[in-house]
Length: 541
Image (tube, rainbow, N blue to C red; front, top):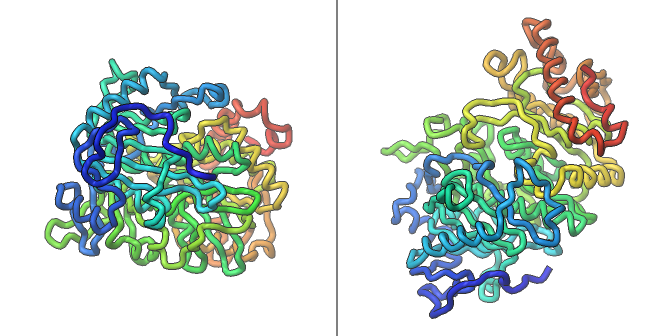
């Protein structure tokens, strides 16, 4: 789509500030404006301004302060007047009135008055037919570098006539007053759909920018018959595309970074009639306990131009300590996707042959791999079972069972059934095989069992992708009805049957019954809109 002029913004006018970029259309009167600086310049300025330090490999480390993860309770939407009824209002999407938004916008303008600002102009959506132009205006150099790493970078010649579809004003140091600003806390992430604008304040966590764009695309793309997905994607030697759905911490980034396959992207994609395309231009990998041996591609991507969040470094050697969780478990690395040696430069792939739902099962009762019928795929997509991993969200200190519909509930402006119907249509049209992978616990629940070995999970994925599991018998799981392979190359047979890994199998049965009950209770809100075959595709407990 053609980039429109930046409409919907009101405010002051005057002489463009130093730096050559006029931000008066936003009502901003800043000091020096740095527009579209190179990663080297942004890194240098961030260090000089005391925003971070360099590691021995040249990556920039930055601290996000007290908020080391997303703040979903502080996220608000201002709807388009004509489409307000389309929004899935509730605990995920909290309404903010236009008057409250305007007051916050004035506070941001006042906060930016005379300040040094950093601007990044880029885009989302590798498929140019659906491209979204994004402008980030931030008070931190490292936030601009993060945006450079995570969004699509444009040729220099496009900057002179750039007009955004969506603008993010990131005033991380500005704190809201809940009593007067109609916010829940000092933090706020407000997406104004009518004016195509995002306000961020009270948090330095850079991932809020990334997820604000994703939320907007989850609103926009379905209007264009494109299915937006919270998933990673890669391509195999036979040009076979695979998708990996899951929340943060379930393995989307790790498992899609496969030396045998080309990486399309690690977190967000669209599925159109022409195939799959990356919504981003970079990766946002968790780094806690990262090792060269376990995740060599991510390890090698952490170099100059990369941003590390909340990673502890040795004050003398400046070596990153990825095992240190004293700040948070949610340590992160942001880097351009082409820092992965075998990335797919087009950011695009064909329709997927295999789709993997990743669940981090803290109960330890889900099979490590199982094959789903189309009806089971719909049931588990609407359920979105996993565990919130420590540090992914503010206030989460240890894994806990949760259900996040479509594996993306915090980012869905529309009702989940809308996205589930889009998945159903594509499964019917293209016949993709859907698998459920448990990257969580085996041999017992969290605290007593052990986390599934990455090497075993990779072996199961390889077997599914290569078609090796097509040649082995399957048997139904007695609790969930899923088809479980009786053997898998490179994986002990006992591991494939969760009950057999527990020392106390009676306790396993109790835990399994409890989890099936949780599934059934969680599915109740969707039951009325689901077909009978989908309702019957859930656990049997």
